[in-house]
Image (cartoon, rainbow, N blue to C red; front, side, top):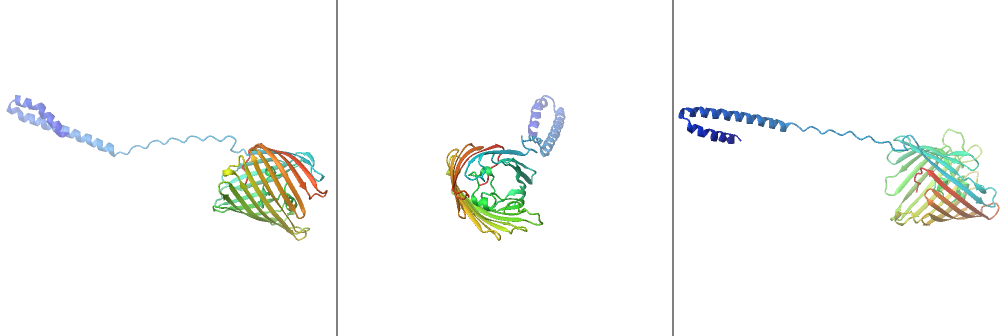
Amino acid sequence: MKSVVAAACLATLAPLAQAQGAPDIQALREEIRQLREQYEARIKALEAKLDAAQAQPAAAAPVPAPAPVAAAPGKGFNPQLSLNLSGLYSRSRNPSLDRGFSLGESELGLSANIDPWFSGFAAISFSPDNTASVEEAYVQTTSLGKGFTVKAGRFFSSIGYLNSQHAHVWDFVDQPLAYQALLGEQYADDGVQVAWLAPTDTFLELRGEVGRGRSFPGTNTSRNGAGATALSLHSGGDIGESSSWRAGVSVLNARGDDTTSSTRVWVADGVWKWAPNGNATRTNFKVQGEYLRSVSDDRPTQSGWYTQAIYQFMRGWRVGLRTERLEDDRKNSVMLDWSPSEFSRVRLQYARDRSSPFGKDNQWFLQYMMSLGAHGAHGF
């Protein structure tokens, strides 16, 4: 750039130098030198400004403020509510059954996350005789890690397969005879349960419980220490894309009191489910069975079992068969139910009961079950 400027000055002043005389040449040369120095000084100043501008770091772009998150409707401090309504018509020769029309067992459920570490659940049961009872009410950890979960309060024990299921989930109107005789239909306790899920590809879960022994075969006795303990181990997995299974063994130890001795109940359970390509929406099939054995010092040892199969042959329609035995007593049941949606079900059941004190008893049941409000997923 400097050479270009100098050439331009010479080209401009050369004709003047020729026109003027030799005395003026020295003056012209001096003027050209001054112009060259001025331009060179200005160019250096511009180059210095350019270098300074390039060396300065670019200013950081402003970070936009995060958009406010709108609160989810229906959450926050409001627990989720569910209401299961049930009605029943029964026909039997046995007067000890609640024959005729009855309300059945209706249930009100409340559940919510308490904070990042705990959740809570309560189920209030309403019986046909206008009584209400706390079926379950417990808090449970949500983030202990390492596969551990702790539950405290009142809850259904994890022994067996059917025991932890609520009545509206049952596939038949009533519980099997072995459950009625050895667990008082369903064993629940007040206490603490610790569950551990193994970090393996195959499902493996161990649960231990310490409680008061509130319901049969417990004695619901006021004492220091535990009135009952329970331990259950279950494993399961998939067989291809269409089948899955679960099996386990459990033991319940209930302490006696001043008039009764302790009782130990063993339970072995297994269930196998099939659904084409894992999609149970239209058709599916389930087989399950349990064996129960109760040992006590002051009562005869009792044992019983049941096995049942449920087949959904088209959307909303299922048929089921259950056969069972408690010592020498036998009972066979068949049912047909229709579910217009996942929130409603109507069931017709027939049972041939040979355990009745009135001889062979042909029992008929017509039942409806409706679910309102929030309803969580059921267990396997």
